[in-house]
Amino acid sequence: MLADRTRLHIALQKSGRLSDLSRDLLRDAGFRIQRSKNSLTARVENFPAELMFVRDDDIPTFVSDGVCEFGIVGQNVLEEFALGADEQRYEVLAELGFGGCSLKIAAPETLAYDGPKSLTGERIATSYPRIVRRYLAEQGIDAKIVKMNGAVELAPRLQIANFVCDLVSTGATLEANGLRPVETVLDSQAVLIRTTKMLDDTRSKLSAGLLTRVDGVLTTKE
Ligand code: ATP
Ligand code: ZN
Image 1 (cartoon, rainbow, N blue to C red):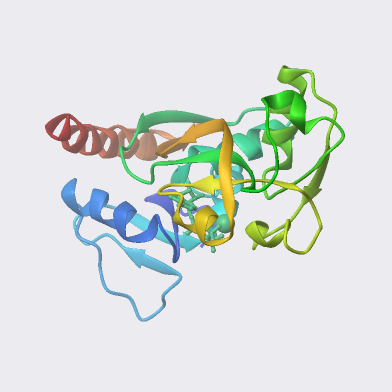
Image 2 (image 1 turned 120 degrees about the vertical axis):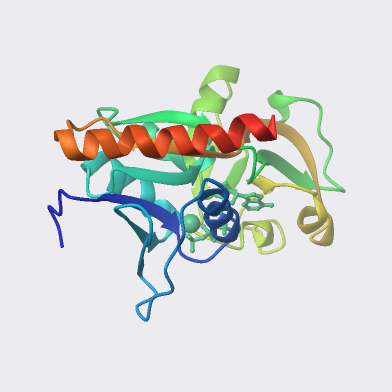
């Protein structure tokens, strides 16, 4: 399975907000995705490529290691990964125009807020500690980051942290939890990434072919 050098491997989110949109993009680009008994992978019928369905957080690792030549992932996940990697072993080929959201700092509606200096000495709960640390450093603010892997919006109610930094698209989830956005830390959308590991001739040609097809879809959408 590993070192199958005759085909490309494309890492996609298995199930989540990017799953259907990622598959739709590949279908629009002319790739016919085979139904598979095994839900972890699927072959492309009319192109030597195999889709690998994984957690979105694993996609930057797989592409950096060259286990998958391509991947589709949110810039938020990619940036958090990049800030923890000592070397960049992937390249961003295209912004895909879906999966749009922003990483925002939010606070309880009742809490006074008067710009980033209000964060001084506070605790901020987030699943994106590296991005938040960089933001605080840029602002020259000293605050404590509390890493949570999910349910970040609950942190203020649980008195884990006064502030949260989480992904927001409509803001409905924040509002439902009595929170309001106060700062935007990062704007994000889904991107197509490719490993910078050297590919042999076969996969290098396939890679160019895949890119041409995807570019075709993106230009017609512009
Ligand atoms: P996985 O099980 O793959 O780890 P997940 O729960 O981490 O899934 P999703 O909630 O499915 O991830 O979100 C995947 C990506 O969708 C996010 O990383 C982000 O780039 C994008 N996205 C777009 N809108 C939102 C939103 N409102 N909230 C969260 N993510 C969003
Ligand atoms: Zn995830």
